[in-house]
Length: 271
Image (tube, rainbow, N blue to C red; front, side):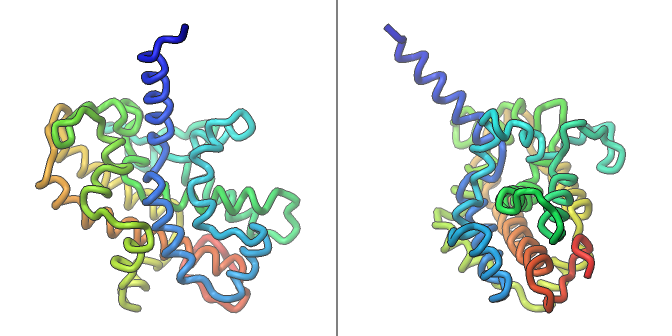
């Protein structure tokens, strides 16, 4: 007879592994929904055709599950880029299996190449997810602690780790909103603010920006901390900013790929 405690532990371990990949479902849904709200009609039609009527929100979390399957296990390291304290963003060793910065560039190149024979739907699903990932600070975390997964602490007296609280728990504690409510409340940038967010956008620039945030998080979140209201209050505005940046930048990238008349601010798609 299978021990019930074993089954519970196995389920918990599986859930932890899945959570260890990204913002959590609501964060990715929010990024994708913000992006979807800023797509041109031409881009919307192209995406609708590629995804067979499904939206980018529908697929925003797809890669977190797919990366755990044998077919897509090669994407496991595409969710992050790790930089240890004695390294810089620029000189951190590159994994042979890839990272989030290079993967975004590669998927965007596939989608932007009309002669590419690669699976465009797959590239689009991957790209939508990874643009969300690169804006989650712990995805620019340290190699020596597995992006914060080994930094043990308490969150409102509950045992957890640094990566986990940045995936879901700070976000959920800051605002218990649906992803549509998140979008409606934070997607309010002025044209001037939007221009600053989008200017000269590249995965390298986004990744370094997020790495600097991660460095500050490490400084202010020592292991064995017991975090509560003050921490949520301090970092919720950062989460709001990162989700908005991710959504607006994803829209700019997709519009640049699919709408020939759209003048993108990013440096990824050259017309």
